[in-house]
Amino acid sequence: MIKLALTVSCVSRIGIVAAISTFLASNGCNITDSAQFDDTNTGKFFIRISFTAPEGTDVASLETQFSEIVARFGMSWAFHDEAAKMKIIIMVSRFGHCLNDILYRYRIGALPIEIVAVISNHTDYQGVVESHGIPFHHINVTPENKPQAEAQILKVVSDTEAELIVLARYMQILSDEMCRKMSGRIINIHHSFLPGFKGANPYKQAYVRGVKLIGATAHYVTADLDEGPIIEQDIIRVTHAQSAADYVALGRDVEAQVFARAIHAHIHHRVFLNGNKTVVFPASPGGYASDRMG
Image 1 (cartoon, one colour):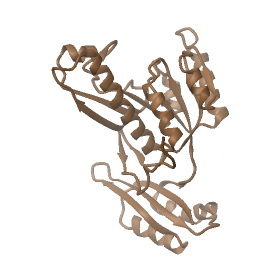
Image 2 (cartoon, rainbow, N blue to C red):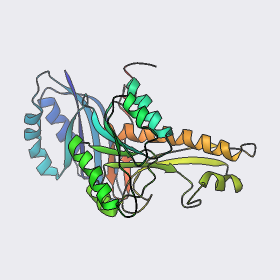
Image 3 (cartoon, one colour):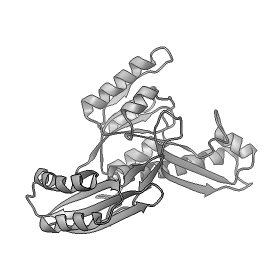
Image 4 (cartoon, rainbow, N blue to C red):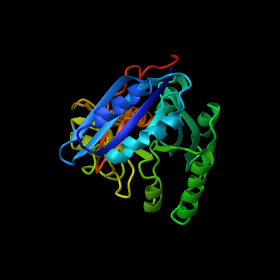
């Protein structure tokens, strides 16, 4: 048996689930997991179905047959091979906590991805990256060369056929043009103090103000800085006894966890854009399992 997933979004109508399930059954497929959401505010319907198909199933033939249902309901849709690993580029500057966390999860199989490149405007992590057998690209960015630098970045994306860019604390603002070209294909991570504490040392600002909750937000990148559709968030509590340095350390820990969960959701096709928001379905059974430990 082969494992596939079907993702669908469309205007909500009666009969969508029945049409999909009947189609899969008629092709000898068995549904193993399903999640759906009907947004009564926007009138949109979202569904993700994991299923097994008989060995030797021609996915192209499934897609051709499914096109009749697509036309009937006006669907945005895709079939996904659940064994395929998404090609990802990591971009990083000088804060390495998210990069190192991703590399560890990648190494043990907790994030089933193919890291095709790491791009940085510094060389701090070149040795770490290359020790994992991953190509490292140092692309310096200045106000004067930004268009040329972004052209280099997009060439790496094209050459590697990368499907997703993750900004692992990449401390450069992407141009509106790049955000548009890669819409829905760039994920960023940052602290959740915005807009309260902007600029340098947000954790120190939070410490001075006696903040009791530290959080992190992972979101898709848009031209509106740090305001793209949110994929994942989390918080941890701090007390009066913590130092400013504690705030930084605890904040970095929650950033790494939130970022990994957002990437996991995207690579498993569990995230649907819904206007300025997202629909994020829970992982299928076995979706978090690693193929090795340590």
